[in-house]
Every structure is written in structure tokens, then in C-alpha cells.
Image 1 (tube, rainbow, N blue to C red):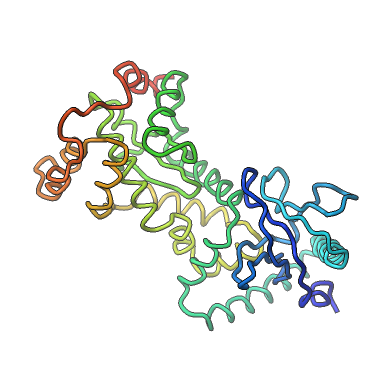
Image 2 (image 1 turned 120 degrees about the vertical axis):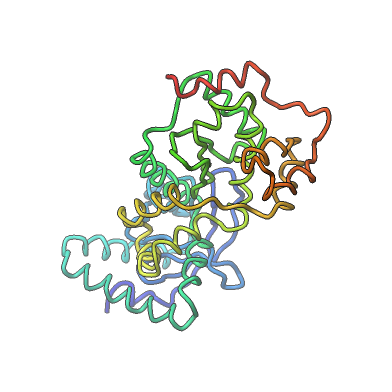
Length: 336
């Protein structure tokens, strides 16, 4: 009997903190296929942690504080001695397995077959993407976002960075999105903008360098925000990489490098997507941004964007939150 098999029906109560500034919440801790499953009282999974990657933050302490990997804000506190013993034994068993690549491959293959069978029963492959998106810890979202940004940088070059320009870019971000987002200026060729998992939004440097004010660039920022709200980019990624890679993520908490590179390429080469005008205009109104310059930039004839002009929420007395000095600094962000 394997350690995981021995404890597969074991459950305990723990205290889970999703991020460093979040409140702890009570969860049910149980074992999945090579994962530690955290669920609410209604048995709805909240997070899956790879057991092989789980780390103890306070060795010898009680309750024991776990993290999904080193350096993460997400934590789990467990004071049930039997569960603590079980987690330790299963982790040790999995880590010993790393010394036997052939055995590990068979274990992973078996887990994958079982997972595919389970998801086949549940429904279409899109369900696996939705499920993986829902249970992913915030720290993992940010990590995957950083990995995708690196893949994008391999294609476009590094994001532009120049001191005063970066300060102005941060000011634009705070005006339009809030500090939970990150905004980058890159050389994207023919594509105006894109968004990535982890609240990352990319702007083509041409939107900064070729316009006399921030209105057009700001409009594309809001367009990407609206698109991300319509379809979470993490779900898009899982749909793109396929069911097998998604199931492998659920088992290992990692995404294949080649799959990430393919998704990054698709984000830069795909056609222009537009959210519903009504949804987008609400975002323009919320931040006090005129939508007419953005409408003209998208389609100078206004054949497809007249609604953005007619519904402009700030037609008179418009004042951008970036002054002339901020905009001049931002236009030099790629000169460093």
C-alpha cells in the first residue's frame, strides 16, 4: 500500500490564506492524485497544491504552516497530528520517487489516465480549463504570468524601461486599472495590445510614440481589461494548451515550456478582438476617459466604431489624469 493510498480518505480542518494580505479561512484538507486538495464546507475545491512541491515554513512548530512552494505568500495551517504525519509521509514518498524516473513516469501516466477518465465523465475538455482556472492559487497565476511575459520578450524584446517613463506608466496604470495590474510597453509589430494571465497588459510602443496624448493608449488598456473580464486569460491559456497539458498542470502545478511559448506566440499573432461597446464604455466612464480618440484610432472611418463616439461618456471638459510632462516622459520610455 502506497503512502498516498493509505491516506486517500483522510480529511482535516485547516486555515488557508490565499495571499499575504488576505484573511485566513477555514478549509477541508484532503488528498488527491499527487495533490493536496483544499475545499470549502460545500466540498467545492478552492486550490490544488502539488504534494511534491509543498514546503514547511515552520519546521518543528505546531500548527504546521505549509506553502505550495518556497517564497509564496499563500499558506495553510494544520494542527491535526494525523494529517501532519500523513502529509510528511506522502511528501517523502513522492520525493523518493524522483530518484526513480521510470517509476515516476509510470505513476504520472497512471494518474493522467485516471484524470482523463474522470474529466471524460464530467464533460467537454473546456471543463478542465475552467476547473484548473478556478482552483489555481494566486501565487501560481503570477508565476505563470511572469513566465509568459518572458516568452513574449523572447519574441518582442524586453519591455521598455526608462526611469521617468516607468513612473508615468505606473501613473497611467493607477489611473486606469489599479495597483493589482502591471502595464508594459513593448515593440509588438502590427498588434496594438494584448493581455496575459496574472493581470499583465501589453501596449505597442507605437501607441505611445505616435500620438499627441494618452487617450488612444489608455483606450487600448481598457479594451484589454474588458476582454480579460469577459474571458479570463488563464482559461484561454488552458483551452489553448489542451486537455492533456491542463491535466498535467493539475498534477504537477507546472505548464510545459513549449506550450507556454505557443500560447505567447498566439497572443501576439491573433486577430483584433473587441469587447461589447456597452461594457467598454462603462470602463471609460468609470475612469473619466473620452472614448472618441480611441474610436478614431481603431477605425478612422468610424464604420465599426461609431457607437464609441455616440456613447462617449466625456464629450466636454475632458482632462486626462496624465499631464503634458507625464506624457512626454512616457513617450521616452523606450529611449533608455
